Length: 259
Image (tube, rainbow, N blue to C red):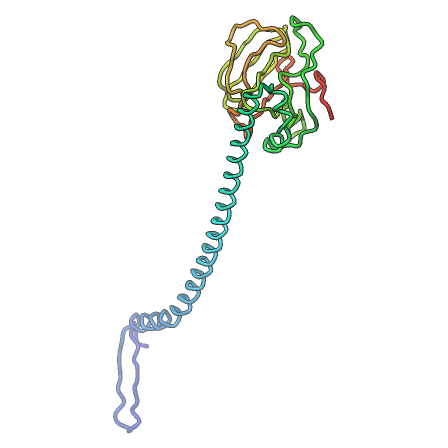
């Protein structure tokens, strides 16, 4: 090496005069780098190619799983629609036959409890014993199957009880009081809140129609709404809760349910 150049000596087999090639160092380095890339490029290509194949296989597998899930979802939707159509037909037959909503709830309360996400512990009844002017909650707003009870367990909190009843079932006030809210709620849908006395409030959620408005004075046993499936609800049911000084309490101590 002389300065920044390299001399390459080429000696022929026929013993002729050797040839000398004097080239810059950067040219040698560039040539070596090029040769290295030529040798490494196929390896990189093979690795990338197999990675692409693996991802393509995963994509195909996920596509098949998604298609299977879509088929199951479609079947569930068909079954759910069939169930709703059956309920509607039963409701029409019941109306033609003059059957009341309580009997209709008995006819298919269990499947509504399952659709609501819980197992029904029993059929709850209204069973009021206090006078219509009593501000103490007594009994239930309707007769039906309890699909979900009260719970204050962290992570499983449920502020009231859910009654699985047919949509359009009359909802009755459980105590004397004043309507302080009657309107839409993001969670409870069409909701009624009644102030009973100084510290008690009763809440009725997921209704299809409200039959009272804010400021109305109502008596225990007065019809205030029709049950429904509004708000964050997976099936027709009524959400009922009792609040004392703004805090939810277990309403199950105020009514009787049958095992």
